[in-house]
Image 1 (tube, rainbow, N blue to C red):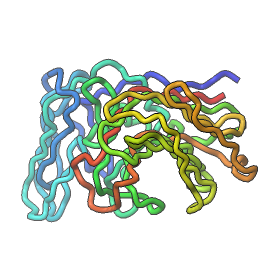
Image 2: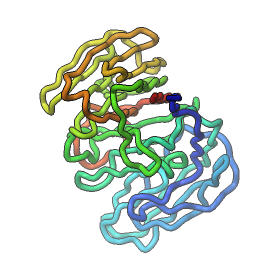
Image 3: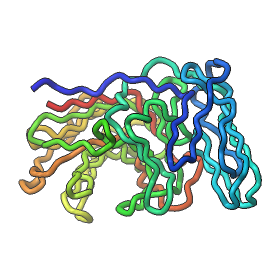
Length: 320
């Protein structure tokens, strides 16, 4: 069987997506202004949104949304997804900021990923499906100065019912946004080049057991080195230190693989972990995750300040 590779798709930042129950409003094209690509969108006061002079799909423009006809207590969210209090019910303004330069295409195939963000309601975090992801940008997910994809996690945010930690994380999916699923009997690898800009105790990648709705393996980063959290049953997991300490703001490349029924991890070209799960686990279906799942962040009102920040330059997924 020929390998299926996930590679090469752009991330134009000057386009906003119509998402999250109508909270986002797409703007028309504005003046083409390059630069300022790493600055996340800013926060404004509450109000329902109408389009202002927003960025176009090219190099971007002078973005902005005017919040008018505000509903008392409403939350204003701009193309960057930042929340602003609207308790007084007055008109607000959300500034999309300066135009963003989309830059060259990035080596991430966004068509096979769904994004989960640390905002939403209750135990239902906001998600962005594959068709919209390549043109989506907000303060939790945006292009860095050097072209990498930034994943920001606040100290508190919305989580799923099965987790107490918010996340800005990609889940491997099919074209319609449903979870991918593959057998560990084949060859399945995910190779990622990135770095942690801020924080520690962060899950930067996962092999996830779909039918059991738990992780099988989480690759975690701290300044003291990497570790692998392994869990075949909920609440029965444990961590193995993998060494290979990498300072903040220093690039690394890792590969997580679950091939021929063996779970492996390699860091910077060296295999540092290998384990064969029990027979009952090998009959399950799995998918990959990558991004910033900060194990030190907690459930609560979504923050807009970075508690941790992970940058990803490339993701190469192979199934065969």
